[in-house]
Length: 101
Image (cartoon, rainbow, N blue to C red; front, side):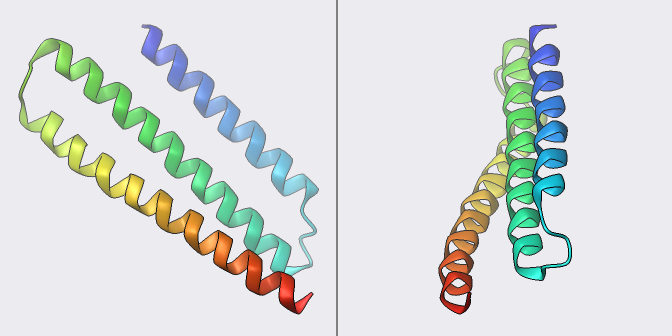
């Protein structure tokens, strides 16, 4: 039950932060809009990663080794690699965009 509350809190926090970021963004400027969308995408991937981690912990308490744990570990590794990739792209784009502004 505690894990559901944590994931609900993370989901609500994601929605609130996304709304705040989009409300502060100048929607007519494509540069700032692309930065905000990248930040929201990173936050969404982190949210999914937290959900996978909580699910793996719950399944590990029931059974030590199962196919669902292995599948979710693979998904978690894939998502975390994509989080690092998106952060790297955001940093690279931030430097390039700041040169042109």
